[in-house]
Length: 302
Image (tube, rainbow, N blue to C red; front, side, top):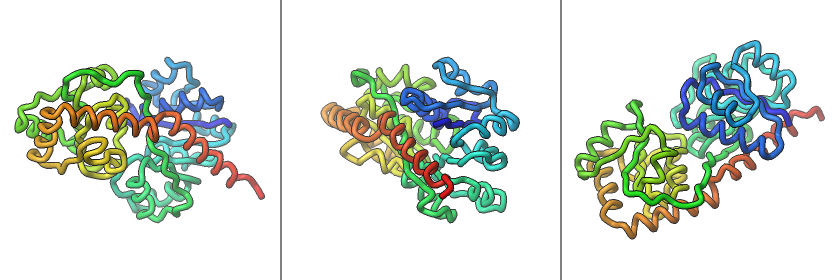
C-alpha cells in the first residue's frame, strides 16, 4: 500500500509527533510511506533523520505524488484543504481538535471532499457529526505513544510549556502558587518526564492530549482538565485526577498527589497499564491500517 502523508505544520506539536510515530510504525509494518511537509518544518527533518522518505510540500509535489499513491492521509486542516483541491486518490483526513467545524461554504466543500475521517477521540468525532459528516465516514483512532522500559523515578512536577492561552498557562501558575508547588514548564518532555512525579495538563478544550498519554506511559500521576477528549484517557481516581479549570481545584489536585506518595504510585502504575492495553504506537498503527483497508475496499469499482 502506497500512502502519501501530508502535514503543513511549521512547529513540532502533538499532531506532528503523532504523524512521525505513525509513519515509523507503518514503515516497520512494510507499508510504502512518503511524507510531504514544509521545507523547514521540524517534522520533515525528524522524519528524514529516521530514514523515512520525505519531500517538501508544494502544490506540484502533491499533484505529482498523489497520482501514484493508493491513498492520501492529511494530518492537519491546511493539508486537508490542499488535498481536497488536488485530489487524485482516496483522501483520509485527521480530526484532532475539540472545537466546532466551521460551516462556511469553503469548509463544507473541503469536508465533502474527504472519503473518510480519522477522529482522535469520541469528542473529536462529535464535532464531525455535528457538522453533518455521516457516521460511517468517521473512525476513531486514539493516539499511541512509546512506552519506556522503566517508569519515571523523579520528584518534579512537570507541565508542557505553552504560550497558548487555551492551554491555561496563567491558571497553572496561579494554582502552583496556591499549592506552593514549583512546576517545571518543559520544552522537552522526552528529557523531563523521566524525572517527574506529577504531570499537569490544563486546557480549555482538548481533542485528546497525547502529552498526557506520554506521561501515563512513564507511570506518572496526572492532573488534567475535566474537558474534551481528556475524559476518555484519564479516569478520575483510577489513572489520574481530573480537575475543573479553577486555581483552587487544580491546586488541590496537585497538593493531594504531592502529599500522598501511595496514591501517586497507584495512579501512575494504573495509568501505565492502561497505555499498554490501549494506547501504544502499535495499537494506533493497527487501527489506522484497518481504516486504510476499509477506505480502499470502498473505493474499488464494483
